[in-house]
Length: 164
Image (cartoon, rainbow, N blue to C red; front, side):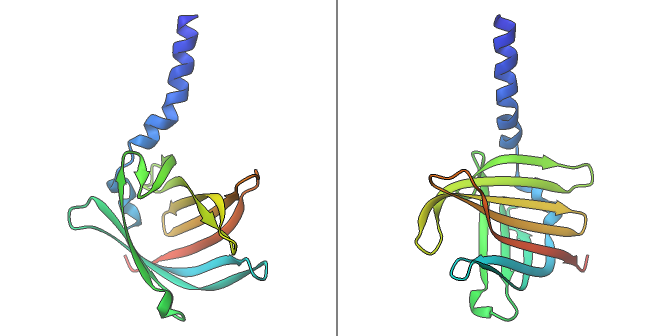
């Protein structure tokens, strides 16, 4: 019986231990310039809206932070820069719930955080899925409103690497 309990405990801890080991260097293959589009759900109309979007990814000088510079060629007022650090199994304020790295240096990282979303600012769980393949990168935001079990795709960046 003790062996069964030990085995179950180890199985339950494995995903946590794997996610906890994520470091900024694990994301370094996504460093570079990316161009593509952002499609988001317009809650006012209930329809998706697509616009051009570019992201430049760099690391901080000390290689401990991950910097995403968002550029919207036709809506420059929306441009922004986010610097995020991985600390205590969190990517910024978001908890890392999954991280898988493939042998080619790509990865899938999923994060979740409690927050608010929608036109009426309802409580929700916000999930981000970062997926790097050789020359493609996507970031998906999904929302699950309080009191539901349904995830809604809020937005999606689909990007292709430019340059090296």
